[in-house]
Image (cartoon, rainbow, N blue to C red):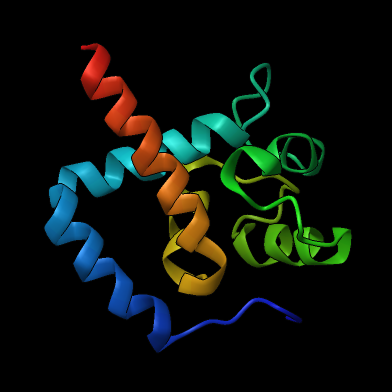
Length: 117
């Protein structure tokens, strides 16, 4: 999968995120990411919704073939879309280099939400 690393690198980031946000906070952040990327009518992430919304998570620089590869890698049941569980599993497998900016944007959004609460 060109440009998208897997493996031990991301595992190093997850404990940091889990410690910072707590287990529930980490899950909440993943759910927020899913909500931003999903097709609101179908309630799954489709290729079209991923392309349309990827900039919200700082993924606008990914080429179409990289987005297609992400969808293929994450689509565990082969239905051509990512449900919330598939998305979370995929996020845990992606490299921190790809997700660093996304985490930052999600954290910023969470901070904003807390300030307004």
